[in-house]
Image (cartoon, rainbow over all chains, first blue to last red; front, side):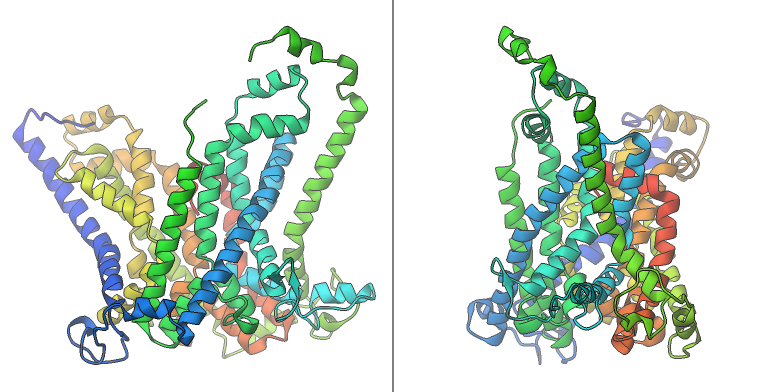
Length: 320
Length: 293
């Protein structure tokens, strides 16, 4: 740390002036755009609130009346909004629970495989697998929409070429695979395609951090490739795994663009209505900001609770 | 691990994979990796190939991966459409992304420097607040943020996209981590030589952080360039749209013309893909280091 016991008062003062004059505006700016929205966001959950109506101070009161916990009660009621909210929670939960294992099953083995090839090829593979991450999610959704298109989409044209019948992939309300609606499954595949490079890169970095000696010792002990993966790689990758699991779940709870662009406003029979989509619709299509902020609070709570549970479950007490 | 009698006897030289086994395992590894690569590349190739097809070829059976009569017609259609001011959209995206990146780099490095190298009242409290704000998802903030923009009167303007993004809690955190590793002796020496505090920041600290600044800058640029939800909320006028918003709007107008929508998609992702290939190493290293998304 810097000069903590200054020898000259003027030097000390100039440092304090510097800290005060640089950090104060930056911190005030950040607080204005985080703390203020946070408080405002909590406050409007207790109002029937819309910026299109005239109210008192900051729009509160007047045509935006205080309604207590009615917005929260509404989430559990039988109103159309309550039902849509619960459908969104169910859909998002299904998406998150499907996506996490799917992602890990693909990215972890793929990372191990990439680690096994020589250095120059490793860079090539990594570069290619990471490409979808930098691509605009809208463009990703559009090209996959073209692939899934029922009449002239690549998938159905290939199927028809083989004499099979095509499917209305993104609009099919009845077909289910293992209980998962077909449109949800299609979005899952697209999301995996667009997102796997991220975890892949983190796993590769984690694998490079495992000391070579453990593998060598295992080979001397006669362990085969699977045993080395199961009993050396996976346990020693634990902190990386924890990070990946927590981050993947966090981001998949917040999924929006892909669902919004590929399946529109909730897809067939609201089968692909996810939470953020619901928040967006209630807030900016129906202009019911109070209600939407309440749904957003519920999302925040869900994310916090799942993250804390995961961190608790995945805690480790050792280091290498 | 101890080498015991038991473990030694398990090593059976004849059973260890020989040359053929080694080659076979290599073949399997490369086959799997190439399979994964084709899964990753196919949608890109399909996008590119469709954008060079004519309106009649996109509906032809069987589908062709390489266009039979490659044409630039779809691109010409987009560029010549007076209702689609594509240059304007590019300019909007560039203005927003460059302003946000410049401001985030400046505020993050300055605040990061102060947090790393100065002692002051409330330092820990402020830093904890900063970290806590990282935990709040954007989706929770977006409604009240929009309400703030309404009060400031900057909805439906590029300013509305730039102003809330001018600082980054993550950026401050990242910069602080980097600056902590710069020896304090360097700063003390500059101070003895009579450098001002801001002079130390701009002439001693900044030049040492080009790698960190580049990493943060690239990520911020990609994030802002590809951002969709926030501009979707803020922007309503056609001329103020950024590229991703233009893309969904264009798709809603020409949904059945895959050649046009794919050409528009290529136009949107092209700049970012170029940036990616130039800075590829830094991006991948940055992710591995920070876990930033």
